Amino acid sequence: MKGRREFIKKVGLTSLAGGLGFVSLSACEEKKSNEEKLSEFAALQGSKPLYEWSIATTWPPNFPVLGEGVVLFAKYVKEMTGGKFRIKVFGGGERVPALEVFDAVGNGAIEMGHAAPYYWAGKVPSCQFFASIPFGMNAQQSIAWIANGGGLELWEEIYAPFGVVPMLGGNTGVQMGGWFNKSIDKIEDIKGLKMRMPGLGGKVLQKAGGSAVTVAGGEIYTNLERGVIDATEWIGPYHDYKMGFHKVARYYYYPGWHEPGSLLEFTVNKSKYESLPNELQEIIRAAAARASTWMFNEFEVKNMIYLDKIMSESSVELREFPQSVLEGLKVHTNTVFDELTAQDAPSRKIYEAYKAFRNNAKRWSAITEEAFYQKIQI
Ligand code: CA
Image 1 (spheres, protein in one colour):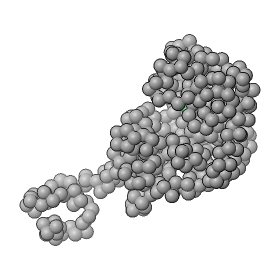
Image 2 (image 1 turned 30 degrees about the vertical axis):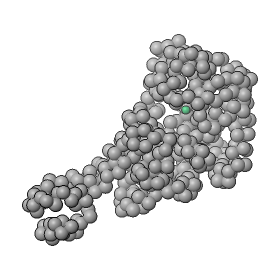
Image 3 (image 1 turned 90 degrees about the horizontal axis):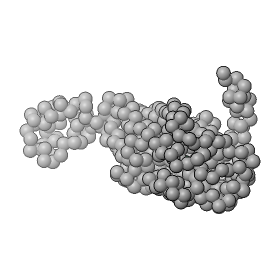
Image 4 (image 1 turned 180 degrees about the horizontal axis):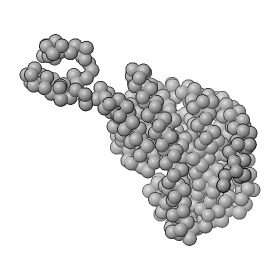
């Protein structure tokens, strides 16, 4: 320490102690002369980060849209801070196992995470209201609820005991209903249907007599090809095309009643977030908001292009779920929510807030977006 103190005194940079550059000078470097250190520091000045954080995602590295969006988030933070705040991005399993990201952020093993909130349903059942609700709100409605309609405060409240701060981290838009090798003409056709479908949608499927199968991403294609499963959902045309499902399925059903606008999340370790100066907290929020918007827009742009590719490159039949099937699934959805809210008090509270906003949004959307889509747009 003596060498470091003398160095600081000598170059008259005491105000920088603990800040720019000095944190990186290890004990072995103290053997260097003050002159050498000074010249090293001069080289670092202006480029050495003050903060070096990491973010772990639940996605494979550079996963289209979601992984890419997180890389952009880190880039925005770096550029807004002139390189003083660097965030290193890790794909699922590279630093933290994908399904342990929430715990790792909470206990401070890593500063940030990016994920789909429903992965934590076993630990925090009410987190599902901030992910995807079957027959629930679409992207526009759910983002409005979270950002400006009181949703974020409820989300912060349920994550606070785990030491985690949540922020919006993108939205997939309305997903596709999935790939089927069996025709779905009536609700009874769901009986005995083996379909890969996670989360609350899977629970609804089970209520309708189907079996919701969990299959790892890399095995879905083979299972569908070999008839181990009759159907699978994934995301939308862009990601589905890359999985190649159009080569092994007969029907591509829409709409994705089970995921009408799945939200993703950025999470930050609460005490590390609170230890940041206010301007850096705001930069994190601004970068997350920008990356979130980028992800939503990227889904919109890529999905419309890739649906055309799927239809022109394969013999898959694009089909809409019959209304009677959707009505039947709605009844089962209500049962799933009755059970969830009976078992979990936070879910009960959040579902009330969610329903109130959804009902208002539905009335408003009926005379605006819905009327626009049906009657106005050329
Ligand atoms: Ca999905």
